Structures are given as structure tokens and as C-alpha cells.
Image 1 (cartoon, rainbow, N blue to C red):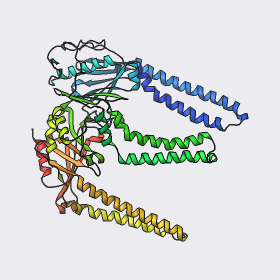
Image 2: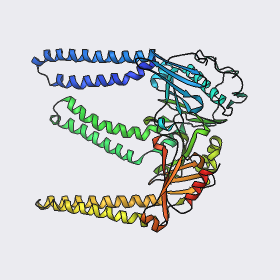
Image 3: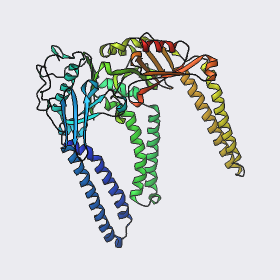
Image 4: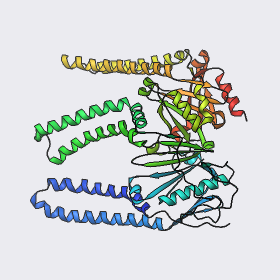
Amino acid sequence: METGKKFRNHISIVAEETWSGILVLLVFGITQVLPELAEASAEDVSFLADRTLWITLGLGALLAVFLGNRFLVWARTYIYIVDNTIVIEKNTVNKKKNTIGIRNISNINLEQNLFEMLIGTCKVKMDTNSLSTADKTDVKIILKKEDAENFRREIMARMQMTGAPAVSFGEGSAVDPGAADFADSSFIDGSCAPGMGERVTLEEDYDIRADFGDIIRHGLYSVNIFSVLLLLGGAAATAGAVVQVMQNPGLVKSLLGAAAGILVAASIVFSALWDTVKDFVKYYDFRAKRRGDRLFIRYGLLKKIEYTVPVDKIQALKINQSLVARLGHRYMAEIVNVGMGDESQEKNSFLVLYCTKEEMRRRLELLLPELAFSLDQEVKRQPISVWGVWMPLFFVYALAVGFSALVGTALTDGMESGDKILALAGIWGGAALLILFVLAGMGLSYKTAGAGAGEKTLTLCRGYFGRHYTIVKYSKIQYARFSENFLARKCGIRKGAIHLLASAGNASHDIPWFQEGLEEKVKAGMLAK
């Protein structure tokens, strides 16, 4: 077995892996030292100075050990390609070698945060078709931007060598899967893989490219109404706290205490503000294209992300509508794929930004024609007999809430008349709201949720204020389960769930209540070749 050229991550990986630890140490030092300095008297200063010195030395020692450990791991970790596998070899105290088959890679992505943009590096992220690692990125490699692009080009070429169809990157440019042996190729010095001819670029025109207006519209339709309400409430609370402090400085013991109170309120405001406006900046310069059996997606302003996804690794298509988009008759599309949206900061795997249904159809015909037809698939609302299953459970819930309100009423005995009236109003008003809230949720779910079984695909719909469709080919369903309780059996309805090869958030999808017939279509579709 011939071994390929070994290389290491870019040295900047040490900084990226340690900055959070450094920040934690700094925050710890500030929170431990500054409060005491602010409250110390003159005679305590000398004691605190000595204590601060020891704390500083201790934190410095911890930081040095932390940095030294990360530097050692970087220096003793090597990456190389051999026999269509990627090998990551760590020769630290505990030696470890991870080998990943290139043919099992579900996507290979490039990502740049602000720090990486400044120093010219790029993060290569790869995921495999493995359920055990579906909730995390399998491989992360940091290289110079040009080396990262060459590395991705090499991996994609080897993926085609394993049997996938050739991918065209532009007019007159394609990778020939039978052109040459890649075992001796070197991408880290900037050269392209043998057999690829001229250097291939992924920068040519995209099929879809969002302009500033598209991003603004997408951001508006993505707005979460509850985040807006939280933003307004937080802003009012912050303004109130500032006014109160300015009018009566005696409310706080020190300037630090006042600042802490304001910062807590301000953090709520900024959190809600970011949740409201994040889609305006996250999908800046959104682009997407289809070349051969690959999808290429890129976007980002503060963090640039480039996805390369083999179409056959896509498990499902999701069509979403927020409340605002539902009112405006707009739709957006995501894809479900092992590796896309598997991290907390990458929950959404966008394919098409918010647009009309006809525009959505045109874009899907360009990017994912295998599922574009499913937009016209009929989705049947849950049968009206579902209320026969829901209402007995609802009555039990209402009785439990009513009993709790009675207990609360009994506890008000002995209270003064005015206080008792207020307490009773709060208890029974809260109970009524809890009952109405659940009843409204049942009504919204009945009006929105449903399922439709076509010849090739199963479409599921869920939601309350918004609407979310999941479209999956029967061949992509790992397994399905169906169930019914006593009441459902009497009503002649069933419900179920399907499971996909995807991250935890997308692995399981509930099938709303349905009448007999859909189950048999799903089973027949899964068994069909």
C-alpha cells in the first residue's frame, strides 16, 4: 500500500482551539479579582495585591499548560490520503489513527470565520454516511485557503474514482473518473490532481444567486414573531433600568452592580435582536448550483460556508413556512443530509431562500429535479375522527388543571379580602389560559398537519402557526413504525413515524393521524426496488 504525502493542520488551529479557554480564564480572573478590589479598603490593598499576583501566576501557568498541550497535539498530528481513504494519525501519548473511506463521505464543506478570513486560512469539514456520528462533524482540517480548495478538489475526484458519475464544473470542464491514478498526487503544494487537466475552478456562475433584495425578503419572512415581542419587552426593560439608575443611584451599591443589572437586560435584547436579524447576514451572497450529481451551496458574511453535497446522499427535502411567510404565501427549502445542520450553529441546511411557489418550482427543477415534482403532491388533513382521540385526553388535562386551581383556591383562605380577590383572579385566569392554550394548539394542529403518499415519495406536514413539509423518497426511509391506541382503533385511524439516516434533529419524523391506506403505500414503496 503506497502512502500519500503527510501534512499537518495550519498552525492557527492552536489559536482556534484555545481562544475559548483563554476567554474563560480571563472571565474567571475578572470576576474573582475586580469585585474584591472595588470593595476593598485602603489597608486591604496590599493583601489583595499579593493575592492577585498569585492568582495571575496560577492562571498563567494553566494557560501555558493548555497552550503547550494544544501545540503538542498539532505538531504530532498528521493527515494523508492513501488507497481512497483519509487517514488522521495522532502520535501523542496515546497514539490513535482514524481511517475514513472517501466513498462514504456524504459532503465536504469549506468554512471561514472572521479570524480565518483575516489570516487566509479555511476550515475543511467532512461528514460520512454514519448514524453514529450524524450529530457532529467527522473531520475538521484547517489549511491555507488555496490548499483547502485543492484538498477538496482531490477528495471529490477520488469520490468519482470510487464509482460515482463524473461531475461537470463548467462548460468544457469535467473530471474524468478513469483518467489516472491519484495515489501519487500532491495537492498541498498547490498542484491539481493528475488526470484533471487544467486547474478546475468552482467559481463560475451559479444557477441561483441571491441579491441584496432577496436576502432582505428572506430575512423578513424568517422573522420570529415571538423573538420580536421579546426584543420589544427586553428593550423596554433595559430602558427602564437605565432611567431608574439615573434617577436614584442609591438603588445599587456600586457602578459595577448597576452595570451588571443593565448588562443582563441588554443581553436579552441583543439575543432577541440577533434571532430577529440573523438571516439578514447569515445568507449574504447566497449561491447554489447543480453540476452532475453534486450540489454546490455557498453563503455567508461573518462566516463563509461552502457545501459540496452528492445528490444521492440527500435523505429528504424540507419546505418551510414561518407564520409571516404563510400569510405572504412564500416558501423556502432545506435538504436533509448527514453532515448538514449537524452542529448547533448550523441547524439549517438551506437550498432555496423564501420565494413564491412557482419560483420555488423553477429553482428546484434546476437544483433538485428528482424531488421538484413533489410540490404538487396532495397532502390530506388529519381525519376529523382524530378529535375522538384527542378530546378524552383533553378532558383529563382540563380536570387536572381545574383540580389544581381548586387547591390554589383553598390555600387563599385566611387572606385579606382584596388580596384574596387578586389571588383568585390569577389562579382561575391562569387555569383558563392553560386550557385555552392547549385547545388552540389542537385546533391549529388539526388545521395544519397531514400526510400524503404518492408513487415515489411520502410528504408529511406539521406545524401550528407556521407550516413545515418533509418530502422523502420511500427508498431513503430506514424504517417505519405505526401505532394505535384503543380510542384510535375505534375511530379507524393510526399514526406513525419514519426514520432517516440523518442527525438527531432530522432522523425521526412523525406521521400525523391518518385513515387506513397510507400505511400500505409506505410499506410497498419501501419494499419496491
